[in-house]
Length: 301
Image 1 (spheres, rainbow, N blue to C red):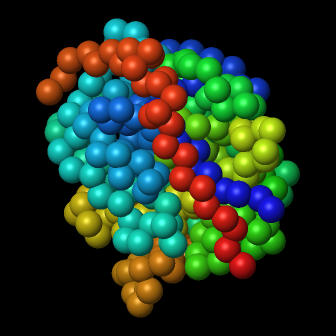
Image 2 (cartoon, rainbow, N blue to C red; image 1 turned 120 degrees about the vertical axis):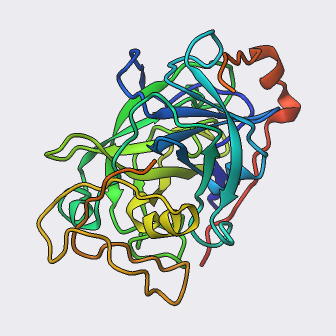
């Protein structure tokens, strides 16, 4: 039997088979830090970071923006004013947001519109997986560097794999090849578009094998599916990509079921709306074995 585990841990090492990210390469990739844990997130407006729902459970306190190594001085440490998980994220969309105490200086990332996803998120397409997660297939070790890997999309609609969540299928998630590990949770998956890379996925969970808990492929929440929820609860507008479609603006949220968000069925683009200091996390503290909180989840029938 396969078991699903959130790609989260209180230690950060990075993407399996990936390369260290150079400063300024992915400035919107954010370290979301709790007192005893770390996740990854994406800056989608100047003061909103999108991450995983299960990361919100650990009460994140600070976001470190504009760094490629949260274990060293540098970057912009911004306290988190509020953290909200998607309603019933355990059974729906495993996403959440953190609202920063003040806008970050780093540029925010546009989310892929659904029409962009239809055109570009296809089987075999290569996407960018970026995160502060572990780099070993055994899920051990310690590192605080940001890494990137190119991984292929396997199931763009997440309709065939037993790891997919039937509540939001088809189209609420997608699966992609080996790469993610503990600490990458909540991190970005970018899709190349004519306008540049856009956020298409949020790292949620991966399949765990007995001898190799990491690097076996993962399940990623479709970022385009939860934009209307973000805008509704924050009152801010999230930037979208432009593409051919019946409409280029978000339509009204008329979905009666919050688990079945249907953002901008044909197109979309909108302008982004709108206690510093350095926070250095001691690797020896966050790598303590007792702080690895791996919640096992079995595939739903």
